[in-house]
Length: 284
Image (cartoon, rainbow, N blue to C red; front, side, top):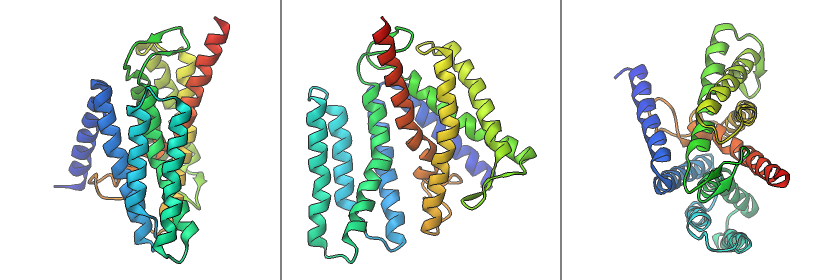
């Protein structure tokens, strides 16, 4: 099978699984995001171990998976108790390092914690945000599970990647950040921004939970923060001298390669939605 066909087939299966898992119901989203976050976390620690670092992979994956479950399956618990239990779980990584007798214990702790924060929390945050009623900017009250906000974000991230690639390939001359990613150009970056914001307006016509201006702001976040997220992942891979983060997606690399933009765009988008909700409730 040619590389093009391999990439096309993998891409098609990836889209079907992602859209289907998100759109079906909240339980399918939880299962999908739990699997992706655990695969991504394993991939993250494997890369570090290959580069002669020593994160506590097993314990950190147990802690990360437990925090994901705690955030999403214990909705009756007050958020402050969630936070406290999560801190207790994270502290076990510190204590475990006392018994591992490694050369750089605090570096190991830092890498172990970073994996959970970087990979697991964004997926857990989205799954939690979409569980239960949420008053949005237009006064729309989400009753139960509504996948539109999450799907919209993914559409915008994918659109930005496509626009940046097409425009950059066609007319890209000025390097965006040559030291980190030689292939990215300013022309491609602005091409991604323009196309993403245009699609943001189109999405607002179908997903009317948010005003079109909010969708376009999300598109801008997807473009700017998404690009920075890709650059952050590039810095990480360069620091440990690898080309792709993994091989789980033939022709597309690993989990971190596919979700790098999503991971860092998530807190900005969710913060925006919470601010919009708060402003709406104050002006009622």
